[in-house]
Image (cartoon, rainbow, N blue to C red; front, top):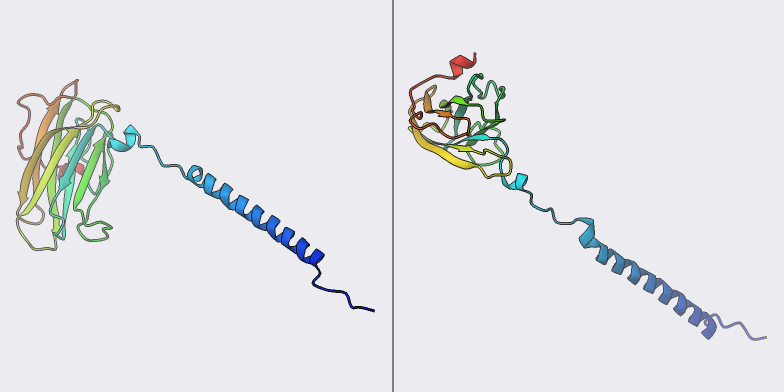
Length: 203
């Protein structure tokens, strides 16, 4: 009696069909995944709120990035308490970035910024305070910029800028004192830098 052929043509044909069906199903699955990939993580659309900074009155301060120096920004809105490193929020202003120089800094940028909620009329004061200078280099040049965004749909407009030289630790200089009117415009003749300490007033 002849032995059964384990590799008969019928068995070989069935295995080929099964293999083809599996490969076609796998190819179909891969094709579906490739078609769906662009829709799984669509590109974020830039909005106006992303392009424009938050807040209405924006006070920015920069000093050389290569200096291991801690300079503090102090701001005071009309009728409010001074806002700085030891009091990061008031009725109108918030200090959003307190830069300590190189200490605990994830970036190499030496930069502090405060934003206001609303634009109260009256006098604003902006000071720079040299808290610590581990770099040991003097003077420390500091640039301050004031911008105003009158409406959420508008871009911020730079209205004032100046540069100060801080010559010793503990020094606090007034960069600006200015007034804004009901239209959020700088009142003509109101800009000056008569010294007015804010750190002592904060206490």
